[in-house]
Figure 1: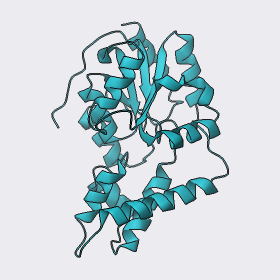
Figure 2 (figure 1 turned 180 degrees about the vertical axis):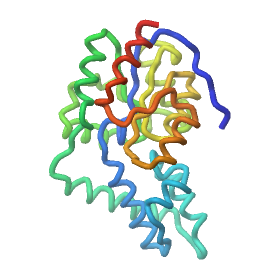
Figure 3 (figure 1 turned 30 degrees about the vertical axis):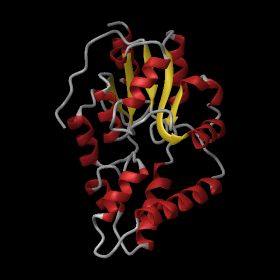
Length: 240
């Protein structure tokens, strides 16, 4: 993908991806993908999947299924894979005793609100699950329901720009006045395609993957919400 240079503009709104970026349950998805693949005779490591399957981190599930199907030597049912993957994921989610926001996220979110900046969520998670995650993480009251853009609210999934064009519309700003926080390559591509500024807060601790986030176009890569440079980065865009 050719790198898209963002249009310089003062930021009036911040859009966050949900899974991974705010609430780290990425490992549940990854393990479910690998279990479902194994059931269908495809045995790969998580390291291989991160390095070789473009949608393994960030999804959507349908594209991961297609990528895994390409590894199959025999007939492979993507429908069967998706059913198994979702079953494994939902069981793992039910077993989790606690779901929390990533360390430092709530403090950053409240600081952004204190600056008078609007916030939204742009996710490819289905709305009922997104609401469940926000509720269990005690974040439901931090976001206006209309400012949650979930799977089904837009026509095309990431890396299409649809979700971040819609978050900007709902915040009543234009996309180049929006800062997007993502944890995946497909999400970064979506934000850049929407002509928004994009920063990454990955959960994958893999040096090649982190490098790829920058190479695909993330303006900055922060290794957590408590990164000391994060507030100054946001403040610079607010005051531009």
